[in-house]
Image (cartoon, rainbow, N blue to C red):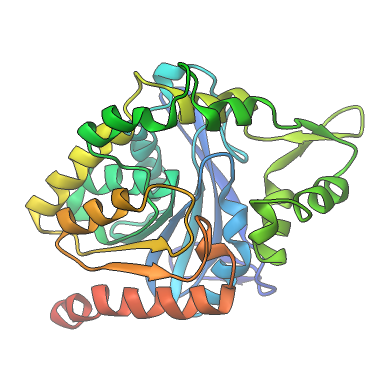
Length: 313
């Protein structure tokens, strides 16, 4: 263990330390991989947890101070199954509370899928605190497109929400869950170390010796299927505000083989005033090839942060 001037204790073996903060009666947890550079906050997809970033965070920690936040209802954060409490805007305030508790003032954000949407809301709520925003397949959709496509609803039901409710919730142990996930899409596309990180931190032990998903299937389904919470359409408008404000430099990425509508991400890039960067892979492309993801994020962050760091030094 090593202790830093700001009081942080960082493990020498690369293992993250854990912590949590309570805001509005709801606990938000994080993993802190340490590091000496620009603070970097990682936000995960719906149904996952900060632990899915573990192998990538270990790579990045030699250049950045890396923290991953378990969004409410996920990982080691408190369970939330109330639709009214699952808005992207509420989760953004949790992220800011976690940053405050960690003593992190200004930070870059990398988000994937649902986590990228929450990242947009963090930048909208506190643009002065977000040094850069990297979006990978953010679930932020123009209201007209969401209405036209009904965001995947068929016969009044969102298929992603229906699928979440059918997910197996309880397993004999983590090894059994990991082996099953590694054998079928979409999780079989994840790098084995990213999948291992998800299974390690995305399940919790039960008193009967079995393990269960930390993110309750109902929570995942409500985030996918809700039409009334602060969700994709509201977050797209928040993206407009962030872009118009001009204080937060942004990058927008998408997988070349995404199963989602690629026009969502083209529209985000247009609003942000940047080129859409296509990454070979699917929706979870940042978790597929970790060496590539490390190089890609390092290049993007250097481009977004470099000139600002030079100006402030």
